[in-house]
Amino acid sequence: MYFFDSYALVEIVKGSKLYDTFKDIKPVCIILNLFELHQVLLREFNKQTADYWINKFDYILLDISNEDITEASDFRFKNKAKKLSMTDCIGYVVASKNSLKFLTGDKEFEGMKNVEFVK
Image (tube, rainbow, N blue to C red; front, side, top):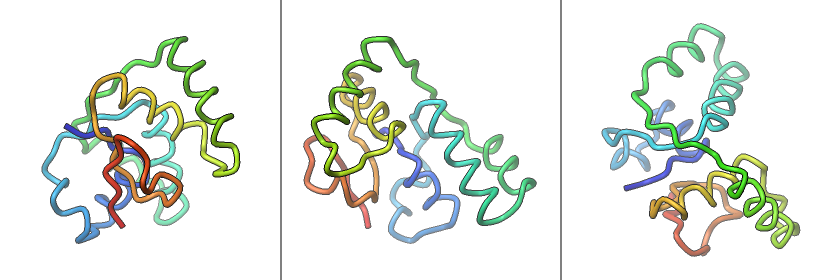
């Protein structure tokens, strides 16, 4: 199974052929990924499109624990040269904790352990 980061969700919405393999898989993510998805769709399309996609996907939303926050913060600090986003760090930690591959096209994650990099 896969944890869909915001990049992957956006690519699926845009109909990227690179993500065709994943378009019929139920996305697993955290609530912060939905926020980022909505923001991108607002910026690139409009409110109607953003609202539509937030409600269209049948997501599996994973909870975020205090332990996840501290582990993600440590991970981000250790990788500060990569300038990873808070949401990506939390998502990466939650994915690992739940034995899910972190699906992304963010170049900062290319070659990292437990990552399915698609770009």
